[in-house]
Image 1 (cartoon, rainbow, N blue to C red):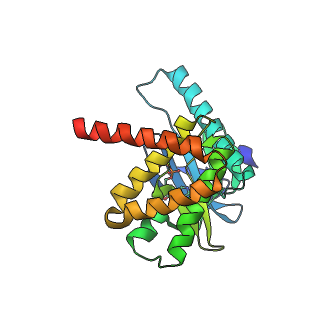
Image 2: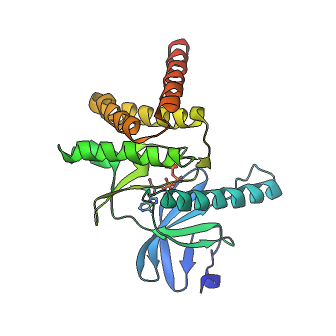
Length: 233
Ligand SMILES: Nc1ncnc2c1ncn2[C@@H]1O[C@H](COP(=O)(O)OP(=O)(O)OP(=O)(O)O)[C@@H](O)[C@H]1O
């Protein structure tokens, strides 16, 4: 039963029933664990407290971020975007148990040059369509990078992960910033071909999104502001 979940010690161990989880990675606000959940490969994302924050404020923030992340994952799924299957939300330990997506991130695949045409083009088009689906549904991802997009080996589907910074918005500026973050990610992680790849993503977005005009106008403005900042700073 879910109530058996315990996080022993200062969160350096994680246990569900009799199965133990091993630490996969540690970010600034969350730890990611790997293990088995009811016989399935699982990832557990655990939010932890920030010592410098006021304890009560901190607890409230942790709870609201956890809820927001879960809601956003579910919302994306309703919009037809693939996200990890949600297994369990444990508020007692601030943990989200979810499907472990089998496969690699887009970042890894692009670095390894393991994608060749026409698969690469198909995938970039899918990225653009996926973001359009999120945005048209009023959801902004908040951390669109090629590390947060995975190609699931079992069905060759593009799966979006890490909804930790996602929020509801229909404001073109917010969507424009979302696209700008992805453009920067392509440019910095995939130097030679990054710009050309992002152009394909953008073209697919333009074709797929009903609100493309307002969003892409804002995106152009966000981009200009970004450039000015780089030139000054
Ligand atoms: N459902 C999943 N299936 C497979 N791998 C996952 C899954 N969720 C997370 N990961 C892996 O764990 C890493 C960190 O997860 P996530 O990005 O959600 O946490 P985070 O602490 O917010 O990280 P970041 O600092 O990148 O924002 C991912 O980059 C990915 O490699």
